Image (cartoon, rainbow, N blue to C red; front, side, top):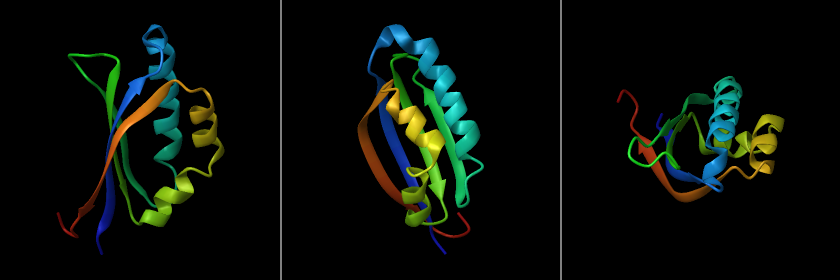
Length: 97
C-alpha cells in the first residue's frame, strides 16, 4: 500500500502574529496526529525567514486527508486566518520506504 504524502509551504498572513501562529500550529499538530489515518503531521519554521513554514503530512489514504478538514480543530485553526498556503505538493511514498 502506498501512503499519501503532502509537502506544503505556508506563510503568515500577519508577521506580527508569529508567536500566536506558532502556538496555534502546535495545537493543530497535537490534535491532527491523533486522527485516524494520520501517519505524520509536522510543521517546521524556516530559519532564514520566520514568516515561512513547511508542512509535512503523511496519510494512509487521500480520503484520510480529506477527512482532516472536517474536524473541529482543523476548522478552528483555519478560521483564525493566521497562515495562507503558498504551494502544495502531493507525493506518494512507496510501501516500505
